[in-house]
Image 1 (cartoon, one colour):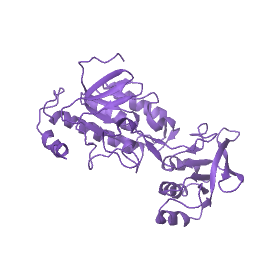
Image 2 (spheres, helix red, strand yellow):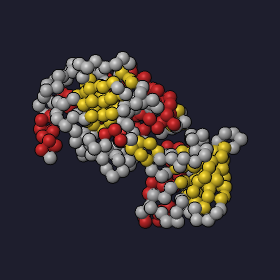
Image 3 (cartoon, one colour):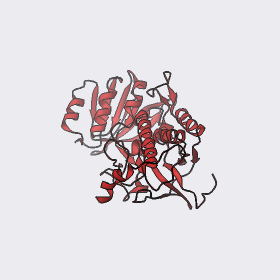
Image 4 (cartoon, helix red, strand yellow):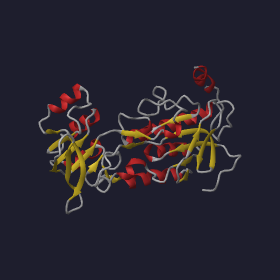
Length: 342
């Protein structure tokens, strides 16, 4: 894409891709808003790291994650979405309604009346040997997504919080056994979640151990995990077909830190059931906001909400030139007044 004109103000800039960003692009492009998506080098979000996706509606035979994301992208592009396949390096958000927000890609400055933040969240990784190579071939970060691939097979969960317990409970319905591996003897999980997991017969416990490395078998899939006791000089190997890493996520909110409200973990805070942030014309969607469900279909749904919220903001905010098809309105002044006064 050519460098931006200093006189151009976009209707919508979407920062990020994945199901949320691409769905927001689809909806805003079909509304004739001509969105610009700064999709990043590794476009497509976490689904680019996923092999078979069997729980996205409309694909009864399943579909590979990269192919699904390509379809999302192609559909948005069909209706006029433009893409910058590069990283956003700086974001400057305006405080006033009808103000102009700025997004930089390197030295290029892009301006817009609305911005949809869809940078997502990254799985926290163990950073051990074999983890990256076996991702999608036995190593996973989502039991809800991948548990069905391990029916009647031995598996393990790495982690000690509520998320790890939830993953273990869900996985136990499919796997022959689930070994919960935690580097400490004590768990961070709540008492009720820990009790639920301990009550399930095919969940076993291995503490205090940390994973040192994963090994592939002859067919290229995960076969063995080597563990180290964190209190004694002892290692052991366990045979498994799947390893689920449940040590948390890192929301990619660093570009907007200090400009919008974030929770203690760095997730973007939006208003009620909307996608609005405290900055007029700035909306959040996908895993950047959602630390509960974190599914492709829920991310796509929130991308739809963000697109509609952005469209309504453009329609109803005095002082913004109306894109074709969006009538003049007067709702935004009342909508944003409480935020300006707070």
